[in-house]
Length: 323
Image: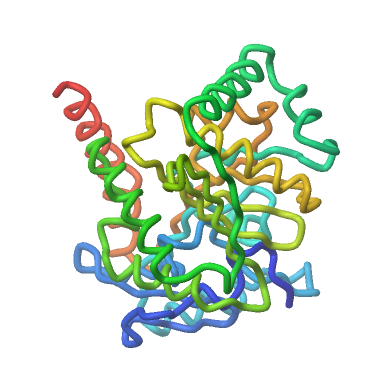
């Protein structure tokens, strides 16, 4: 077996989750939770992991999901299997596309950096408006502040820095009136901290920091796996927000990635509008899948997850915009 992408590494799974809720099935580490009276299995490590996938095998003719995983889940009385963010070019997608039901469709924008020797070449690939805007923002920031940029990798990252970046993100979400599955659960933040502060052999953790007058104005947590960089989490200090430090930090991170011979700069799903301003409209299609394993699972999946929950989300977002 080999890791299909960074998120099939075992380093993500079971850091501090309740061991009673963990289920190891064939090549999957699953977390079992109760939903509307049913037992739902999803990938262990959610929502920290960004793509759900299986480690690839050498036998392309066998559907591991059907042959090994589903029978064991049924034996463990699982009502529904729920996968989030399954890439259309992934091993898991090939296994589930004909037997699962889609509950959500997204795009994961990315930059193909392999064609650029330096940052200037990359910027020339953008529209004139976007290129000038990004350069102008960086120039103005350097005029107003003493600007520094640095990247820290693995054991260069410490607990105090992690806490500082996470607090910046919490404050930013609060200002925007937003939340996320990660930040509404303190245990998940602790899990993320443990993952980042414990270096592993499969991938590298990267912190990109842009400082203005010695203070962190914008920061990003990312991961480097082979020749792919995953842009995981960005944060910004409100005191500098009007000066566009997030744009400048991302610009310098892309420059660093080019210098490191990174080929793919993955912005991950979903397709937030700002992400496409950095790409040449390149993206990978990403899906959420459910696979009901019982009558109860069909009710939960088809009625709640596919119909009712999306409707409730639309109502919530509509009400939020009306405030």
